[in-house]
Figure 1 (tube, rainbow, N blue to C red):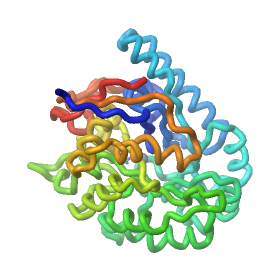
Figure 2 (figure 1 turned 120 degrees about the vertical axis):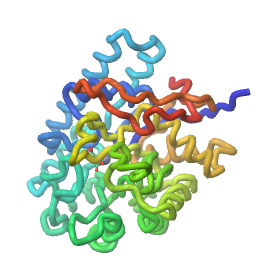
Figure 3 (figure 1 turned 180 degrees about the horizontal axis):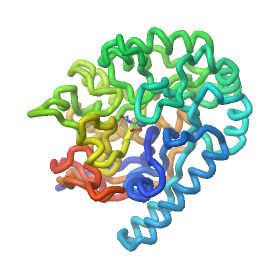
Figure 4 (figure 1 turned 135 degrees about the horizontal axis):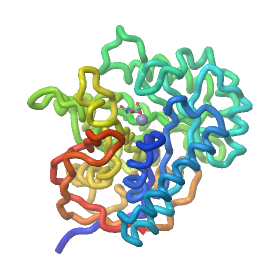
Amino acid sequence: MTRTLQIAAPDDWHLHLRDGEALYHVVAATALNFRRAIVMPNLKPPVTNAQMAVAYRSRILQALEAQCNSGQYSDEQVQAMRLFEPLMVLYLTGATTPQDIEQAVESGVVKAVKLYPAGATTNSDAGVSDLLGQCADVLDAMQHLGLPLLIHGEVTDHTVDVFDREAVFIETVLKPLRAAYPKLRVVFEHITTEQAANYVRDHATRDEQGRLLLGATITPQHLLYNRNALFKGGLQPHWYCLPVLKREPHRQALVKAATSGLPQFFLGTDSAPHAKHLKEMSCGCAGCYSAPYAMAMYAEAFEQAGALDDTSLFEKFCSLNGPAFYGLPVNPGRMELARMSCEVPASLPFVSESGIVPLRAGEVLDWTVTRLN
Ligand code: NCD
Ligand code: ZN
């Protein structure tokens, strides 16, 4: 008999949906696999205040509704897609004010603020170059109001080896930040190293209300692949994302963290769509488009680790730990996955004729999402 897994409907705590036509092409893939998603604000221009976040949220829901009405999906799928809820994030800049933070909390739709160290990744030019120097009053307000700071944790100093930038960030930015703001709620996004996994494992303290002060998201590619994937048989641009894939011991540490059941580790795909021709060029963009098949990939990572014997560890990582960190209810709906092969297409429709190449294009995966309701 085909093996199936049932878990509470999962959420994606780190997602890029883009805007305009790109948004229209990618939003359904997430709504068919996740009930909620933390939507990253690195648009051009970035989403820097509550008003922009509210407007972006309605564009997301409009694009989704257009997909629901496109005739491409079954009634059951449309029903699931209409339950999708985007959770919005402000992009922290040197000009962000404590009033922006207050208005974000009052809006009810903004759930966090994102730190992009200036120059660290795609659309990070408007980010912050000196967090503690530039953002003291904003960090005070966030700490006071309990609004989480989501961190792209890499230093941008070009003299630091690209594979070491996350580990150096922990020592030079994250530790001083948490010492200066001990009640600030922090998510270390898309962690890629043993140092990050161990730091989050050992330093996730709680506040007086019992809320975790530190969490981390982990992507499917960092659980399944090490940096060899970037060079296998030639340069592989579709495996290039930031932070970049690391050595095998780091991957193993991430698998251990994700499958530990510890409440500070949760799912965040970092699905980051870029058109095929912009990945396959002389200076290719960073980002892997994983949303359509991410749940199958996470199931594969857990299965490989021997952590699917009962579904509780998988469910914690995908569906329970994230809501608990964000103080949100667990989704009432359920997801079913079956151990049934599923082929990832070579490319999917996107803004340009070249389309978009999903992560693991052309491969056959062992798991398939069979139901979300
Ligand atoms: C992301 C993107 O394309 O927006 N790219 C990536 O490689 N992960 C930005 C980010 O999360 O760093
Ligand atoms: Zn991201």
